[in-house]
Length: 293
Length: 282
Image (cartoon, rainbow over all chains, first blue to last red; front, side):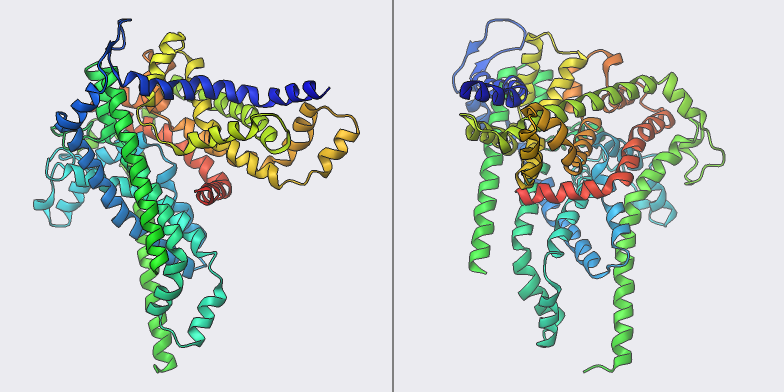
């Protein structure tokens, strides 16, 4: 009876576990195994190269590190511009209760759209010859500012980063707003009775209470933005001349462009380690600022 | 101290500035979509000259062309089939597992649960390379079934987490009563626990539906045949083939974006709930 009952219980977790093992766990293990081989994905014979792929990534693959730097640049802009914007909007909405829902609905439209849709629409708006942005700039009397935003090497990466911010700020906004609304109103009342001005209320009440939320938003931004690439495929496909390459695009290029499956896996592993390290550093840093505050 | 009148004037000005800021950002969220719809109603000739938001003539035939000749009707159907299959699959598979993790005892329960949760936290950017190899071996690449099972696996961990947290908070009295009445475990799961879980099931459905409808990477890697492609992949293929046919591309984009926006507007309560639930997990 007891055994039958346990077997019965396993029926509940069996389908999930089966799918998980085959389509998550096995590929996960294969990535680590394949990273040690040179393999074109077709011929049955894989050539064992040990850590050769990793050595190549570390010392020879300049484009890989350039792509890492590009992703870092986009992430930096997202961390500063996008999250500041998200926080300011959340703060403003927290004060103006009347229209809050209206704004909240609109701010979360970009995040629910697909990266392909957002990328292709913005590519059309930013088009050098027929784009809406250049049209407006010319109309407003600044024709000198008009340019091919996405194919000019000087502006491509920053433009891509700003579109990322447009698509992503709604997430931070929602999380910040939820955080702000957990702060009891009485705290603000008490501060006002004690004669605190707006700045000291912000610094002494809101900031310390919002620190954990800010840390969470920061970590989600880092992990999400570093791995983003679909919008870039839709807007520039990594061009002009590698100026908007990001790591996952390089992994795709190794796999589909040069048919080096082992190398693609090694790149994936290296990138995964960097992401884990980044979130660990971020976690320690946010704890440190909280403890010393 | 300021005079009350002056103080009030200052408050009003600040309020106006805040609303101005909020409205500017809100408008910036809509303008690109408005431009997309506007461009989808122009012709190949007017689209490069006419910069007005409301075109002189509305060429709705672009939608007919995109739907038939552009193949977006077929891609739309594919997206619907994939989204529905994956969501139904996840609802059944994830809720079974979540119910077991919350209510039933069996050896290995904790380790199994931690495994699912770990998958949610460890990023593996190269996993699609191995997934491609695996599906090739299983002869599931370039098949609808292969794509559907992969997407079920993608949504599994987060769905199990959401459902388990819900079941944990659920009182057990009803289930106990059903057991005394002689109901089987599967019967209790289906007839008692699932109906009670409706609010959280709504969150699971919406998030997974958005996720599948918007998915691009696996669709790009797994599908070669055009007639199997979902909308997101087909849009990129269309853009590559008809580089300058912007009216039809914009019509295709509108066809792709519209259902998502409608679902979002109708279900935003659940979406907000889901985002904040996801946030408290981290």
